[in-house]
Amino acid sequence: MGPVRGGLILSLMPGMALAQDCALQRPDWDGAPVSAVQEAVFLASSPAALILMLGTVAAIRFKSQWGSLAAVLGWTAFVTFLTMLAPASRKLAMAEGCVGSPALFIGIIAAICVGMIFYTAPPLKGR
Image 1 (tube, rainbow, N blue to C red):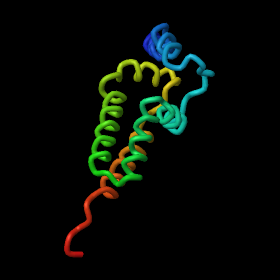
Image 2 (cartoon, rainbow, N blue to C red):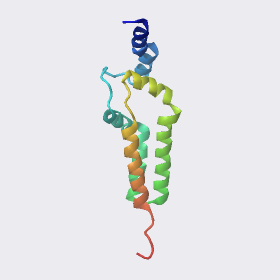
Image 3 (spheres, rainbow, N blue to C red):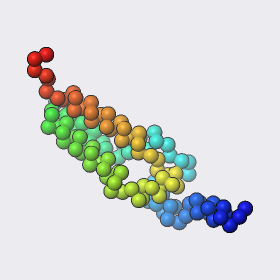
Image 4 (cartoon, one colour):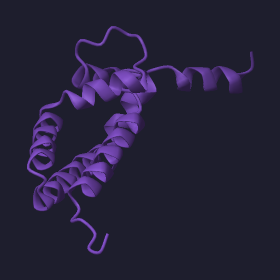
């Protein structure tokens, strides 16, 4: 094994910064890589997501256009925080394996928001 490959392997091993990041984000992590489904469940059970889900259900129940707009804006802010405002710590934790990809969660939320907008839209006149 040459020095280039040896250095490459050592650079891919988790370091102290990665271990600290996982200890902060997921203190009960068992060492197994987190899948997208597990990450979606984890994100959906966060307090912010539960409050937004309650707002989504209320907007659908009362068929409120303004309520659905507020819920969509809230979900947009939550997803923006996940993807743009805290990406450095998430990337380190994803490299370690204690945080999974949020893509499935974001796709589910996008589908819920689109469905909510269509459901609360005013009926077409003339049909």
